[in-house]
Amino acid sequence: MNPLRPLIRLLPVLLAFTATPRAATPPAFEEIRKIDVHSHLFEDAPVFHDLFRRLNLRTVNVCVPGGDGHLATMDRVARHLYRIEPTLYPFTATFDVTGHAAPDYAAKVIAWLDAAFAGGAVAVKIWKEVGIGIRDESGRFVLPDDPRFDPIYAHLARRGKPLHAHLAEPIDAWLPLDPASPHHGYYSTNPQWHLHGKPEFPSHAAIIAARDNILRKHPTLVVLAAHLGSLEHDLDGIARRLEAFPNLQIEVAARTRNLTRHPPERVRALFARFPDRILYGLDSGWKPHLREQPPTDRQRQAHATQLEVRYRADFAYYAGQGEILHSGRKTEALGLPRETLERFFHGNAERLLRLPEAWAGR
Ligand SMILES: [Zn+2]
Image 1: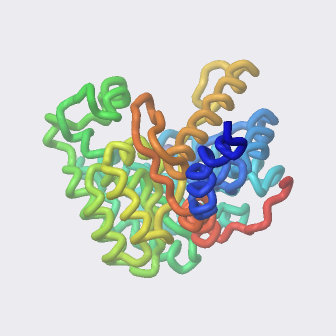
Image 2: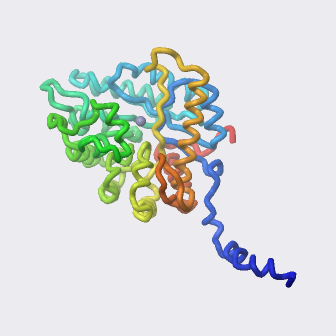
Image 3: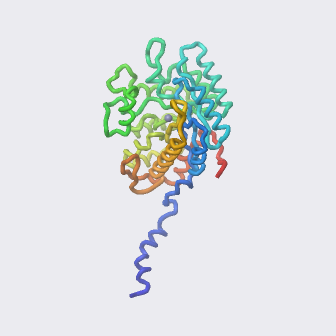
C-alpha cells in the first residue's frame, strides 16, 4: 500500500479546513459575554449568582407589573440584588399604573422613578396592562399614548432612561386558539389575556399605533420594545418601524421561538440590516413574593437548571450552525457573524442601558 494514501485521502478534508475562515467557527457559549435584558429574578440566592457567573451572563432585572400591588417589594429586592451584585443585576424600575386619575399622578410617578434611578435603575418598564388591562374614569381602556403618561415619558427622555415597553401581545391573542401556535400554552391557561371574540378590547393594531405615537410625540425617548415589539409575526413591520423611529430598539425575549418559525435567511437579513438595534433577552420569572410558600432549594436548583437549558438553546439558534432543536422543534441555526453576536448579546445593551463594560468575577 502506498504509505501516502491515507494522507491523500485526507487532503480534501485538510484543504476544506484551511479554506474555512476562522470566523465561521461558532464561538463557544461561555466565550461570548451575554446580557439578558429581560429577566425577573426576585430573590437573593447563591445558586443564581453562581449560575450567571459560570455562564458569563448578567441579567437586567425587570420590575413588573405596575398594577399588582407588589411595586415596593420588587423595588426593594431589585435594589438589594443590585447592591450586592451590581454586575449581575442591573435593574429596570416600573411605576404605579393604577392611580392615573389623580391630579398629581405624573408628579408622584416622576418622584418614585427618580428615587429608583438614584438607587441604580437603568430603565423603566411599562407592561401590557396599559392598553388591555387598566381603564379610565369612563371605563375605556387607557392606551399607552394617553396624555396622562406624557410628562412621565418626557421625564425619561430628559433623564436618558429607556422605556422598556411590553405593549400589546402576540397577534395570536386576537386570533382563535391554535394548538400549532407557540403561544397556545399561554393563552389556553391565561384566558384573561386571550382577546379573541372580545370586541370591547382595543385591537392589536390600535395598541401598536399607540406605541408608534409615543415615539412620534417623544422623539428623544429611547424605547426598547419587548418581545419583538409584539410584531413577532411581521418581520417587515419590525423593519419599517426601526427605519422610521431611530430611537426604537427591539428585544427578542420569549420570542426566539417565533423567530425560529421564519425562514432563516429573512431573520439573518433583519440582523444584517439592524445590527445595533436588536437585543437579547429570555424573560424568565422567579417571583417568590407571588407564592404562598417560600421556594425550596430543590425548586431553586430546578429553576437554575431550566435557565441554563434555555440560555444554551437560544445561543445555539443565534450562534450555532446547521439543524438544531429549539422549543421542541427542528430548526436551522442562524450562524450570525461574531461581530453581530457581540452586539446582540451584550454590546447594544451596554450602550443603550449605559452598563459598564468591565465584568467583575471573570
Ligand atoms: Zn417579562
